Figure 1 (cartoon, rainbow, N blue to C red):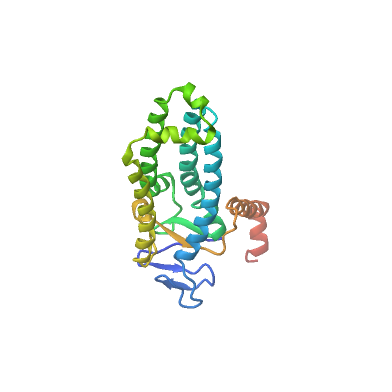
Figure 2 (cartoon, rainbow, N blue to C red):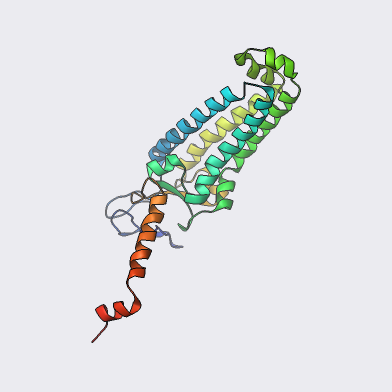
Length: 242
């Protein structure tokens, strides 16, 4: 499967019908190449469900002990950052994007790498890092004996009580950033959100993609094996001029 590529003038071959197109829509089949609101919402809902379930589990686990609170908080930070960075760096897709068949690519259609994935997630990472820092600082000032005596539902409140009062602004900033992403996406033809401008990326819709990206690698390997089965001499004998 030949990946979608964009020329300097913005031309691309439609992955649905193969027509040479320019702009955001194929002139033949009207296919929209740039992922808009609906596919991104689908991807966001899937990724949100996965991360929400993981967050609930981490909240339960870190309430068991003060040491557990520290360990799970750090592990949770790493887990969520890797979720959004690792998948994009390896395949250009989180699980939600795989299901929606949308993919993060460079502006010319080339695959993204670690730098792009890290930059795309840099603002969210910075905001979360501040919150996690204050959570850890607060937990270090809670007496272990008091934490152990408290009920499970009270332990998280003990930590939050020792955090700065203005930490809520960080949560508000995170929400505003998410909302502004969609506003910016609607204001440009290539449907790029703020993190796309930061990372030098664009999100495209390619209906040819298998939901599981490693299936694409299997197809490539199968094609390579078939090519290896036919030697150069056999090829000349079958297709050469006599």
